[in-house]
Amino acid sequence: MIAEYGTPLFAYSKAAMIHALSAYERAFKGRRARIHYAMKANSSLGVLRVFAQRGCGFDIVSGGELARVLAAGGKAEHVIFSGVGKTRTEIIAALEAGICCFNAESEAELDVLNEVALECKKVAPISLRVNPNVDAKTHPYISTGLKDNKFGIAHERALETYKRAATLKGLKIKGIDCHIGSQIIEISPYEDAVSLVLDLVDDIEKAGIHIEHLDFGGGLGIDYAGETPPAADALWANLFALLDARGYSDRTIFVEPGRSLIGNAGVCLTKIEYLKTGDHKNFCIVDAAMNDLPRPAMYEAFHAIVPLQTHSEQTAYTSNVLYDVVGPVCESGDWLGKDRSLNVSVGDGLAILSAGAYCMSMSSNYNSRGRAAEVLIDQNSTTLIRRRETIQDLIRQET
Image (cartoon, rainbow, N blue to C red):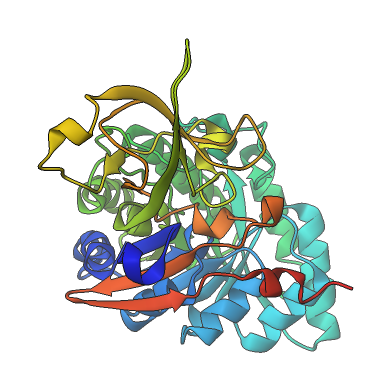
């Protein structure tokens, strides 16, 4: 594969994507529920098409993501628009496309949604994203459900905000939304959030406002370094038990998984350019970098790194050496893995695992580096779903 497509290269397994999705499908069998893939995790058209063909809806956070959904064959009426900073242009595009719902994240946003909808002679379907102040027990950069986070409307303000939204002529209240974070590996934060949301729904409906759907977001974690998150079907067996006990089994349920559908389905393949030894540190310098795979630099995130070669002539190779695996970008933060025990040589390939989510979608052209190619593996066939960027691609828009 490296010989054909070069490196750095992202490769995704369709079978692994479908396997992850199947756990949610099993959980929701016989229920009024819909899965919306949170495409910020990986927005490549080839990936989106797999989920669209499987019948998924999509969770978007920009007008560009809406355009990608439509280009990949997704249905606008199965799109949920989240995010704290929707622009008027994006709102107009979403209204004209006929999306399912806007997840409104502030009282100020409600005013803008109402104003734009009235100007367009449309009614904007909305839910309010409620911030329940639940600790997801994850990295602070990817926690979204605490009071200090920028997301959502404070739980204490939610009831009054719903009452106000009900008076705005350009809005139609459809549901309630709650998303507490990402890479969550325990059930208890979800249980806490569901209980708080249902308490709030009780109060909202007592005020005469009907809630059609309950949206509990995504955030389920994956195995990066031996984590043991619950399977999606096990998680939802617990949560449905809570919903049933509270009398909400008749409501439509929305979920918005991202990382748990694509994260473990992808790898980043890279080639060793240099091995640099020192008194205190040894460096394995590869051709992938922080612009390709930014999670370690951003979050000090861990990705397992595996050599691709197995060598019969061990004498040509050293014994295992402790390396920092680093890229060529001119930043000390450009590292992909620290203190990794590797038996490798220059020219070998490495696979950086669990690279399907928040890698290519957050990649950049820093240091004027073209973004990597991407391939989709389906059984015995491999399809190029994004060609490697060239320098001509990078400078085309400039004068």
